Image (cartoon, rainbow, N blue to C red; front, side, top):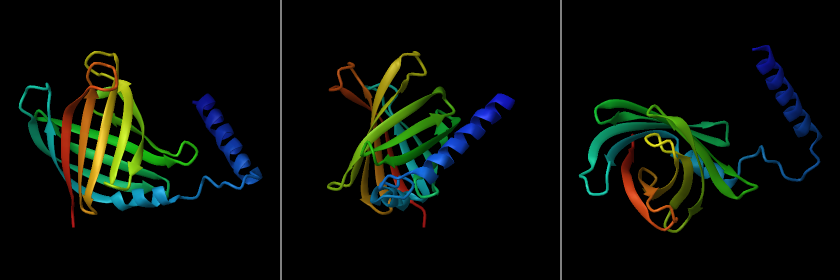
Length: 186
């Protein structure tokens, strides 16, 4: 425990020192227009979930709730609660905009997998779509997997999230695995 505390203390001191001595014109601690746009997702969203466990099967349907809040002005923190096949399911993500990469970046963890997914992607103003590419470990096989997640905003209070799994591993064949229709609570 002492070693962790010492490393954490040293990290904070170095971080504070770097901020105070920075002569750079870029201030990465200030939110960009992309961070401000992410803040528009803050709130509680009701979700209708459809999951395909195999491409030729009928989807499983369930209800869920997503609660979004900003961590400072730079990170959108989401907590998703619902069920999967009658079992309680909870997931959480942290998403931000990386001004150096000029991409959205994030992570996802949930109660069905001990593995974290990392993702990055871009937002297209027309047709108001965020596309994130994710990499993680398949919790059923233990092998690397790639996911594509597309969020389309129909309005400030409605959005559709669609997740695809990479099929043949060539980056061209994507199989739809989940669709979530969100409506913001008033």
